[in-house]
Amino acid sequence: MTYIEFADAVEKMMNKKMKGGVRASLYTAMKNNGKERTGILIEMPGINISPTIYLEEYYESYVAGRKIEQIVDDIKQLYEEIKQEKPWDCESFRDYEGVRNRIVFKVINTAKNRKFLRTVPHLAFLDLSIVFYVLVDVSEEGTAAMVVNRSHADTWKVQAETLWEDAVKNVKNLLPAEFVTMNHALKSLLGDVEYEEGDLLLEKKKDYDQMYVLSNKFRNYGAACIAYPNVLEMIGQILKKDYYILPSSVHEVIIVPYSEIYVCSKLDEMVREINSTQVEEEDVLSNHVYLYDRVSGKLRVGSSVQTGRMMA
Image 1 (tube, rainbow, N blue to C red):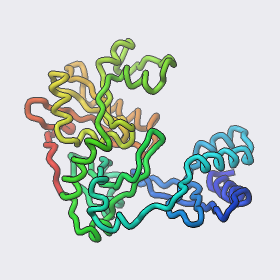
Image 2 (cartoon, rainbow, N blue to C red):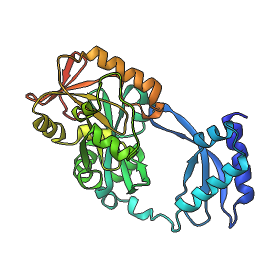
Image 3 (cartoon, rainbow, N blue to C red):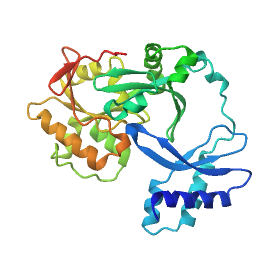
Image 4 (tube, one colour):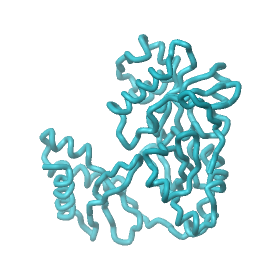
């Protein structure tokens, strides 16, 4: 059974089990980097905000031998946990003042998202692009958000520069940046579980304290922190030297203090290898490293030097 056949079977079985007019249907969404994902959209009468549950992990368990009936029961249970009980108030989104204090931003790869970028207001940041969204809700379990497209901007009569001015104010409170050692990040992620030592840059676990993770509090599109005002400057003040930025995903970046033992081409090669083997396609940010010059406040991309100034 292919993935689409599996999704179709799940849809049919879900509709047999759902009650109260709740309906499941297949939904295909265009995700980051042009990646399409098909999942189950579950709609409840009278509720205008509906979750989409993507099925890749469920399909893997099916291929491994799990019965589809058990999988559908799991999906149904998940829906019961995340479903909205009240309709979403859309009126506040009709006027810019109703969303102004919820505008935030993320950074994505420009070359991989050219089609998407034609539909949204955005700003250039090095070889990346800043796009905006309304943060409807955020918690440890995830986020509910609405991408700001050109029709929204036209209705609100705002330009990308206005969205940027508001977004940089909002992220400080809604998605505050966190800068921690790699060792701390791994312990937070794995708890007391032992993790393997890396063989690309590190030889001892203590070396994890010489690498850092920059993201937001919720580890959701936290790579945007590289565009937060003053964040790169403050990291330079903390490290007291220049540093490399390794784009590990759209959700976080790794900071490595500058050393002559690191060659940019080798670091680029490492990033590309990790992207191709360990990062989901839709989560890839970039295939090369950046170098922050603490004195000039500039980012180096490859052999060139570009400022962190926002450009329309």
